[in-house]
Length: 353
Ligand SMILES: [Mn+2]
Image (tube, protein in one colour):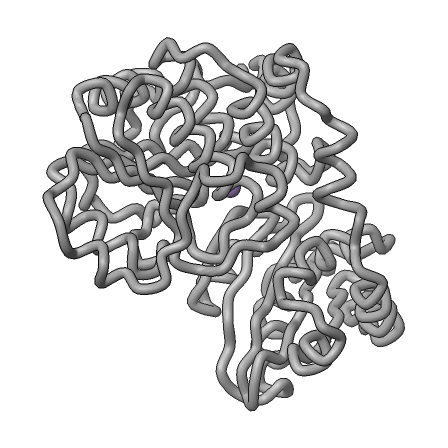
């Protein structure tokens, strides 16, 4: 029997080109070394991986004497903002402002390889920068607009790629960089519980831990310290859970108007879908948020041999095999019919057995 592939960057390949990931990482490191001015961003509505990766690389490049701006043009959840140093990123309210001034040397896009997923900054960055790179770990749909792109789908997080990159840049890990990267790796692995938790994620964890970061503080900030209103919303979602296909398809629904009425934002719903995953027998899990009349946001999770990335893609979204999401315009009945049809197809092999 063949032994499983070693779970590390050195054995990984870029999903698009098939070239060794470590070679491309060297090229990206060289690109950063020769740049003086950098813009760094990640996908819109940043999660822990997007924010943590961008801030960590920003801090490292700043330590190298570069002029760095870490930019986001969408609001950031307060929870996450508390995990990175004040002033380590900038919220851009109007991306037109970025079109003024001199060109920059390098644009870095993280945790997505599709510039349009970074809001306005993606395309503005590409047009303003002489050179561009992206590092990502989502199922590849990468355009070839970048001078260097690295998409490693088996990487537990983009933060894991950034950690390796910072190593190649020769920047010593300090506590601030390590905390940002811990935020990245731990949030994408669900605090080292999801299927992307393996030797790679745990080696990263050990390395970051050695800098003396305060892990319980980050845990409390990420997963606890929630407003009681979120618990109430979660309660209504749980009370309304539905199952179909003998429990293999599990879904919960809420309305954004209910969430906002409780003084919460949609970002406060992060993690709810992962909670639903714990139900016995569930294989495909959907958390549906009605965001407006005939408009829905759908978060998807898969267990065991199943995947939801292709389903998310049909909803105009994407993600990972086991965790993905998209949006739907139409009635709830139409959305559920679409999900049922897709899930019936996915479960067919299993049910026939
Ligand atoms: Mn990620």
